[in-house]
Structure formats: structure tokens, C-alpha cells
Length: 292
Image (tube, rainbow, N blue to C red; front, side, top):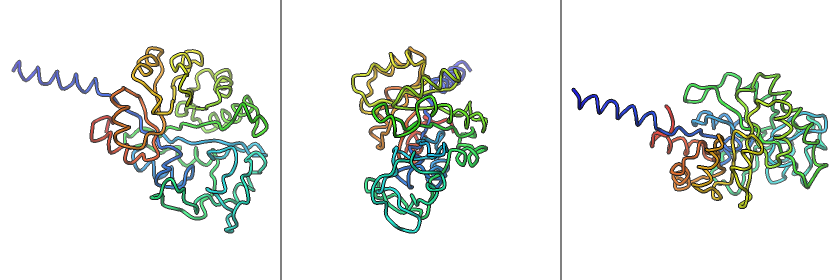
């Protein structure tokens, strides 16, 4: 009887100590579908992603659309009638109506040869994303979350709206769709994060960085950030421990191999952003790092 109790208590102790890692689909599922599109997010959700990671730009008429760069990349998008883009076009110089004339599902990213193309796929708006996934749940049974990046640069101030305006527009949509508890706002440009925290102190923010000299714990402390999000290969065990002592979580981007995931899991990260959410989910599931 005593031996049985020891086994039971040991089992529950191990369960309690298990590290549950949030699976985040980078730009939806860039390795499998055209990035930042509805097909990519649908695939990521079906694959086991807990969180959909995406990038935001502001059109000339102040509409929020999904696109990784501040410009439309001719290698990723063309006009819907098949005409190529002659050069990159700033999102902020286009209206939403003009944006919707683009096809961003017909050109394969050469870095992802297994990406399945979906011709005539338009650039979605943040409204469309929130409406489509309002009731969507991950495999855990929890409502899907959103990690949304403001594409803005201190060095290119006229490429988009000012930081405070950017934050105002995004937060207005978050409130309109009642997504405050499901959104994390991320950026390499911390001005939008600071502005968002000033407007809405309870908004969760994530400091993106690829600076090898940045003290991540100091960044978390200074920004009052819930997350820090470094490039995966810049992260050390000491970084993870120091950030955790600040009460923040660690969210590296974008490891895409099992060896990289294993390395990060051993360091104790809280979430992983990957171009292959299906493979990441399968790896974590097999090793009991997901709760379902």
C-alpha cells in the first residue's frame, strides 16, 4: 500500500513539474503555406498551434493589414491579374482597396521548397483575422491566441504612422473584437510597446530582439514586458534564468529543427515560434511538453 502511494505521489509530482510550452506558428506556418495568409493560419491551427504569430502594417487609409515587411515584396506578391510588381511598394502608400488587388499566394518562397501555394490569396486585415478565429480553439481546447508584431522602424520614420498612432490603431481593434486577454503585442521597435503600455497597462507585450549584447532581463524589467523574444541562437541558460527571475517569459524565434527545439526545451523556454508548427507540436507532444 505504501509503495503504491509513493508511485502515485511521484507521478503527480512529475506532472506538476512538467513544462508546458506554447506552440506559436510563425507568420502562420511559413514553411507550409504562404506567410501571413488565412491558409497559413488555418494550417497552423489544425497543426496544433496555440498562438498565431503575425505582422502588421498600416495602409494609407489607416487600415491594419498583415504583411511582414513595411513594403510589399515582389518576391512574395503579385497583382491578382498575374502582373508582377516592378519594385517593393510601401504599404502606407496603398489604400486597403489597392492592397486587396494583390495575390500573395502564387509565388513560392525559395527558402521553403515544400510550401504549398494557394493562388489568388489576398492579404488579410486584422479585422478578418479576429473575426475568423474569434471562437477558434487549439488542440488543448483553449481559445487560440495572437502574437502580433508592429512593423515600424526608428530609422525609417516616414514608412508608416508614428508609434503612438500605430499603437492606438491596433489597440482599438483589440478592444473592438474583445481580444485583450488573447493578444500579445510584439516589436523590435520598443516605442510601440511603451506607447501601448501607457495607453493600456494590462496589454501583454513582447520585446523582440536580435541584439547579441542586449541584457534580456534588463529589457524585461525596463519595459515591464511579459515576454522577451530573442533570436533562438542568441539565447543562453543564464538569460532564461534571469528573465524568469524578472517574472517574464522567454519566447525565442525561429528555430525550425528538432535539435534546436531540444536545445531550447532543455533551457526552460516558455514558448517557441517556428515556421513548422506541425512538426514542433509533434515533437513537443511526443516528449510531453504539451498538455494534450
